[in-house]
Length: 239
Image (cartoon, rainbow, N blue to C red; front, side, top):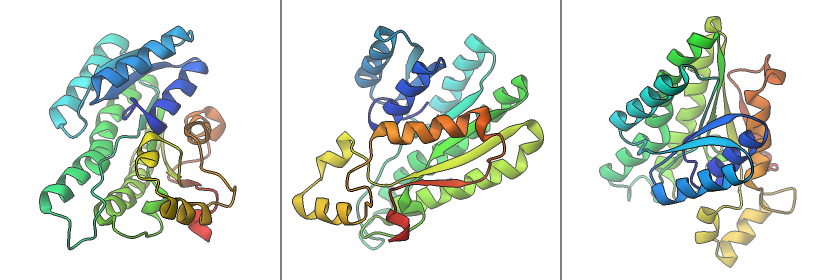
């Protein structure tokens, strides 16, 4: 579970733990991911936390090495980490572009690469990558982020096709506006009006809204679902 220290990633981690999963938490923010670990354990869940910069191939490889050594198998992968430079294509530097791609797109690719090898041991598994409504429809001044999130959707389709024979499914979730610390950090009155105009439910989504979708896609109930991009956006993509 990457990006597990806050927001959507933490919400999915808590939900999976409540449902009985042993959850491996990974995030670059060690203090925060350790707090999520303590919170889950206080609630009776089972988990372990690892400080991991998913922008580093070495640290991703080390994370999966530890999982393999301790557990010997993996049933579910959920990736949620991202990095964004809220700029248009002209104003985005190459350094910003590369960092966004590394964390938001390359990390899901590398995590999938390692996860597939562990899932083969158990006869299959489910990969759920968090994309975004921004991977499907455009909004201003997010060139690198939208490109990376669109790539996540195509990555899911590629994995679904290539590893179906191994019993591995892969799907993307495309959240709309979700009430997270990241959202609240830039939620000006003007931006909130715009976001609410794109949300048919009349409210922001919650991390648990996304966790419900992730839980379904990870479960056997979604055994006939693979290679899809599930919109959990309260209609943003259709308005």
